[in-house]
Length: 87
Image (cartoon, rainbow, N blue to C red; front, side, top):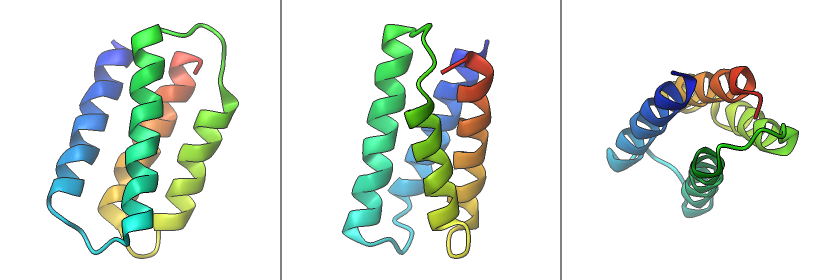
């Protein structure tokens, strides 16, 4: 169940990015890289916690919080899902 929810949240983030919010190319690439990392973890179904990934998502939340609330909400849910999955 958590993996499915996480995939759904990634899809929401992807949809938000497709709506072209006002992001710099660097910010956009950062989010795409986070999505790739999360998808890689899902594919491997890792059982070893990866605090770096959760830390990266939390850092993205802080970065986008003020100017991009819809992205921030999705990123927060991703972080919670990763944590509950033990990733």
